[in-house]
Amino acid sequence: MDKNPLFHNWLQKADEDYQFASINLTEEKTFFSQICFHYHQAAEKYLKSFIVAYNLPFRKIHNLKELVNICREKDPSFSQIEEACIYLNQYYIETRYPVHWPTALTQKDAETAKENAAHISSFIKAKLQ
Image 1 (tube, rainbow, N blue to C red):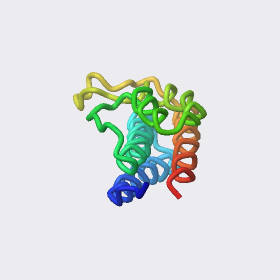
Image 2 (tube, helix red, strand yellow; image 1 turned 90 degrees about the vertical axis):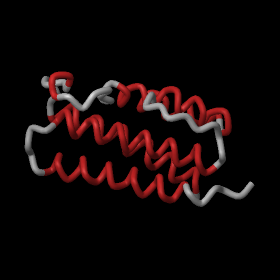
Image 3 (cartoon, rainbow, N blue to C red; image 1 turned 60 degrees about the horizontal axis):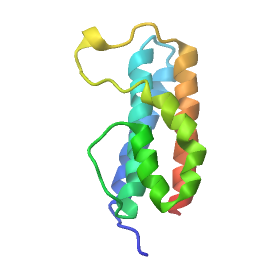
Image 4 (cartoon, helix red, strand yellow; image 1 turned 180 degrees about the vertical axis):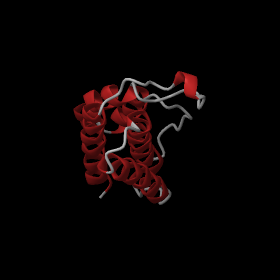
């Protein structure tokens, strides 16, 4: 089955979110909530790139667990990244209003978010080759 070429656009945007978060993490500022949010966004777009590539049911959702379940319908090995998705899910922020942003996140949280997003990225990119 030929892949839908639009998946490349999703991968590019995912890589941009990942790189944005990574650059901010290296600058040693305390924007950990925003950094973790962007790692979540990268993971979301990596998952959606697979969904788009194989014309799976596309839903405008942000829950990584639900997205990985959609991917698992095509490839059961997606269970390998389920824990990473569950970890990153906590960093999605429903609203953009600052009163709802978590404030107690640490550099360690952001580094762990980066590790999980990197795991999802490499797993999905390997699947899409």
